[in-house]
Amino acid sequence: MIKMKSVRLSVLLSFFLVGACFLPLTNAIAGKHHCDPAILSKAPLENVQAQLDKLTPISIAPDYSYLPQRDQKAIHFLIKATKLTQRLFMKQVHPCNYRFLKELESYIGTPEQAYYDFFKIMLGPWDRLNGNAPFLNLDNTRPAGVNYYPHDLTQNEFETWIADHPEDEDTFTSPFTVIKRIDDGLKAVPYSTEHGLKLGLLAHYLRKAAKLTTDESLAKYLESRAEAFFSNNYRQSDIDWIGLSGDIELVIGPYETYEDELMGYKAAFESYVCLVDHEESEKLEAIESYREELLKNYPLPDGMEINPKGLASPIKVVNELYAGGDARVGIPAIAFNLPNDEWVRENVGSKNVMLKNLLEAKFNGILVPIKDTLLVEEESSKPTFEAFFNFVLMHEISHGLGPGEIVVNGVETTVKEQLKELYSTIEECQADTLSVYNLQYMIDAPHIEMPEGFQDALYASYLAGMFRSIRFGIDSAHGGGIAIELNWHLENGGFKINQDGLFYLDVDKLKESIRTLASKLLVIELTGDYNGALELTKVYRVVTPQIQAAIDKLMEVPTDIKKIYPFDDDQQPLG
View 1: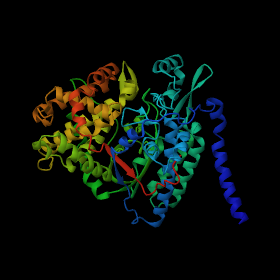
View 2: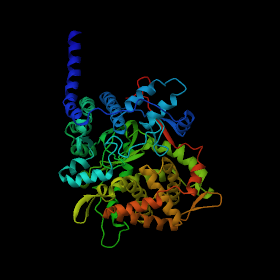
View 3: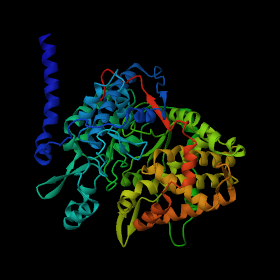
View 4: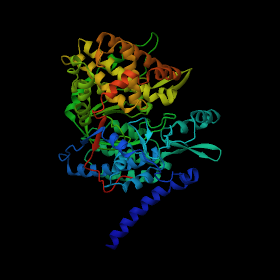
């Protein structure tokens, strides 16, 4: 017994020392975060409950008992790691999130539990279903840069600092640093320093899983990703992730930059633990073989050509087992294309991952009632899960086929750097538009076999799907992109509304409207045209009275799903 206690103590001490090696620098630079004094005000309980009721519960529990025992044990360490990404993400969103959660835990089992339940979905005090309006501490407006930057930092101050200190540009624009005020200046602090203690424990869990798994490709990724948490260099582990070939599909670390609405640079922590559907994955790999044909068909002005983000993208169809952080907050994603490192995309490629169990849940629970409510009878019978699935698949492929590295005024740069906070909205709008454009090419190509009636199913699914996404709010990247598309196609006659407020299609006009919007978006990205992106969003990223009337008809339709995991323990809340 004494020996066992000593071993446990030494393990705990090693964790403390690993994390502590980061702490002096963190404290010296940042000092302690200032937190608002607990929860001072709350939105009315009935309002919060109404927002909760917009999310239909779905159990996420695919069977993994067929895996070897060692891999089943590895999954449990991956679950532990995923719960840590939840904690990391919460800190990135708001410095007081843990304090809020601690107070909200006392609401469990009381009439006010809705506040706790809603907070666990939003992972912060802001309602992501309502334009990030605060539902806790009601004067607590969401900073554009959340907790990545000082809350009073402006875009102009950030850019002026870089102009005056060009040696800081790489660290300031890195996805893996936070910006701190020090005396009268600014400093970029690596994630490995800012989150040192938690990343040390996260690396430990990944290495435990690496020793257990029978999948050599997964073990390689887990080891290199664990090392990345200390080095703050994620490139090699991104490459190793693309090479995963077994039954378990895991992605973990800082990836998407949607939370950073100030500059669009900083990456949020997330984790997906998934099981691969090999049969479905093999069926879809054929689509990637048409990559070069699709690129040649892009509607670009004469003399302009696209340098796509990366090489060919493997396609994985998976069923989600567990998720945390940015992969879980608010409206859950149904697919993703990673990594976002432009060098990796250019030199190695990227990977498309389709979350089949979430896609099916959203189609049956949300898209079906939307089409029955908003589309004229002739159109409402056309959407199919197959068309919806292929649209989402091509959306992810189109991300990889879009511009990444560009040259502006003779200087090598990236689309993301040039479009700044507008990048995510423009990129999502482009991926949607090019998805339909690319699928239409495949429908028309005589050498490509597509299902009977696929064109009608595609366009009707595209239209109905817009009202699934726009209800997320036009301040979100996906919702904002959809607003641009919807208003553009209404203006150009591709979508029409009858006297009863129901939607129908003019397919010929819609094809042309998609072509012109695709061309405009590609030119904006290829030229890094920030002003063009700003003008497009100002004009089209709006909710018109017609669109609002349609949204109002969907009051009884769930906005999205609320994922319920058997691995969650409500008696021991995350945080």
